[in-house]
Length: 159
Image (cartoon, rainbow, N blue to C red):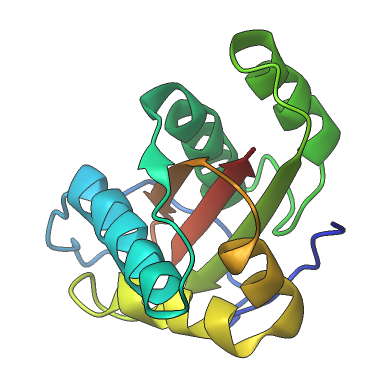
């Protein structure tokens, strides 16, 4: 399966220190781990509603996904799937399964709504929905926030 990039509410803004907007206003702290688990829950909710088995959460895969989200938020990596092959190799070192896919997204919605906006965007996109509903068994989700409040999401799917 070939992952395709999908931009959710793209706002191009230069990076700034985490937690502080470009105008210098502090952002309310968010629980990134809770957001990651919410994405996982929402994805499994969609999968089971469509007759697909739930994905198990794998923290080692999540750490690799989180690194990509952090790199996108910091501007170290472009928004998208650049470096996917390297992430696959990292996952393969711990989980030598044969099939991998990835969804990425970004949006500037507040933390309580942001995970749902990301997952709904993936569901609305044929390529992302194919990954989300694919024949995978494990997943890891990584969420990071850029200083302007934009959230970056990476979900890696592993068979």
